[in-house]
Image 1 (spheres, rainbow, N blue to C red):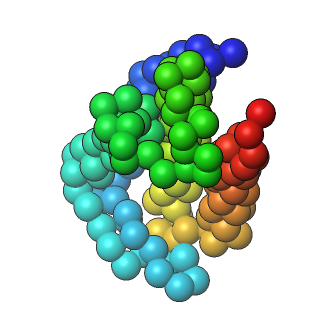
Image 2: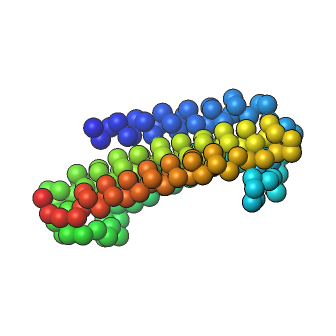
Image 3: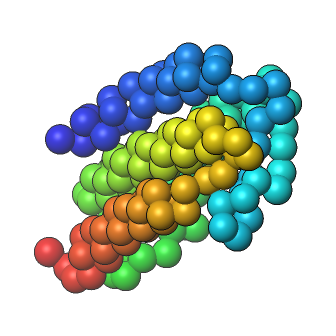
Length: 165
């Protein structure tokens, strides 16, 4: 079971940038990339700048998050703060605890990539309108979906380490 989030993360780390690259071809030379109240565009980037930004963002942010949740606990166990720390990090449970964090870090990485893809698709759609305008209701649906899944991720951590087994 622990391998599924890791494999899914690696797959999404490949698929996410490919999707951004292949779907960005129809964007205009001047891409509306930031939107204010009412979904009105108030910030622009060049076509190539937008693609470079999205590719970097969709790869680097999830990688940093996964590294922080997966590698840092392995390298700096003393920095882990959780209830019943001595129990969860005892030698016989340390590897399972650190592995659990790594798997769930990968799940968060997948969630971040999906959220950024959602923002990318909203940006694509916004740039088909004249003038460019973001559909705020769709944006809030994507945002609320992300926040609900993030809350579930946080609750999973709280439930996992709330008491001794």
